[in-house]
Image (tube, rainbow, N blue to C red; front, side):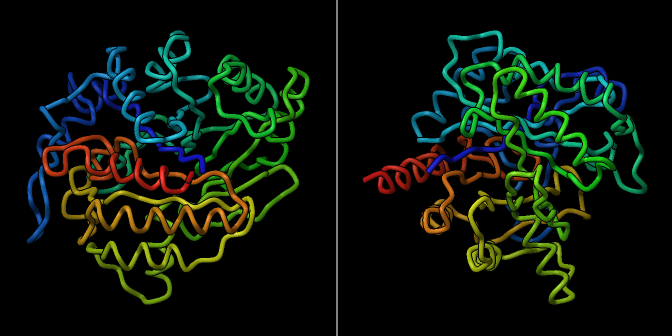
Length: 342
């Protein structure tokens, strides 16, 4: 089973965030200022040894890659941001590309939404900092040219020589079939077997397979949370980890419909009282549901299973060591993978 962990690159300064939030803003700002809003809530979340790292320090990714490899994680899925050729938070993966000594498999998830303040927790109406546009063939070609050096990297994750590319909200793209067709054609001309497109099911917006979309993945806990609300009429900020994970496991998945297992969830550091958090999450429960997800994925004929997330500290959703659990979550992943390969 190939476990791929979603990876947030927002742990370094960028001009866009400094302009919006003040100099020195990174995801750690939200994490450090977090406090307990609801009774029983575990905040703040603190990295082990106060390791508030900077992703522009190349040793940081080397440390992360070592932890992931030891735990048996196959690779990282980096969030990628593209705004009509304007790049945001691209430096960590650019540093990875240039450092061929770093043994780390990876792929991209294109987070194709406008860059807004509410993403970082501001209340009120969404303030769009950078709009998301898509354009036509000229834009698609420019975007493909950005991807190409990564696709050509031997460490980039490929499925039968087709680079794996996730797209966060495929339905937001007016001509997504034409764009994907164009990219697949360009990739074949560069010696690949096309591009392996994975549509992310974020909420109640499952994208039916088209001839150009190869697979889909449920982005959890979001997908199941929205389904739960739709079925029950609930709209609670508190979710039970056991209930969400049980519902995730009960949903049928066919071949090419990948599962996601999540660690924990608490986005109140970003969203304050408008946030959501889970109760009853623990390394032991994570291990149990991860093992069951691996088993189901095998039975369904799928070799990929996604983990949310490697380092979503602002969502309480991370595998990296913290002061509460130490390396326990990574040790649980390692145990599941070792048993699965016996």
